[in-house]
Image 1 (spheres, rainbow, N blue to C red):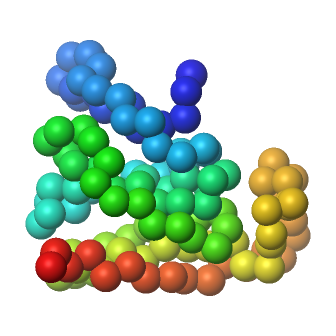
Image 2 (cartoon, one colour; image 1 turned 30 degrees about the vertical axis):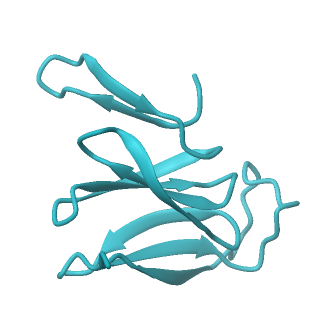
Length: 112
């Protein structure tokens, strides 16, 4: 399979679309306020913003390294992303590291 976001109809299991995001697409979060999907691309170190109707990338944010899980603020204007702390791009993400910590970054999602 290719890295990216696969969109399925949960009623019948049919694939509705595919969006090529960055390498290592890891987590997805839907924002109904802006009708956007946010995809963490663990290996490429980016966050892809996908229009949830057109299934196309509208923006992309570069992260330091290895973005993980996400949560939206209550007002849905801020996206918080967990980033592996203390690692660089030479780290093997398939190797468990005891005591690994994360830091949190935020992205202001307000449309201008």
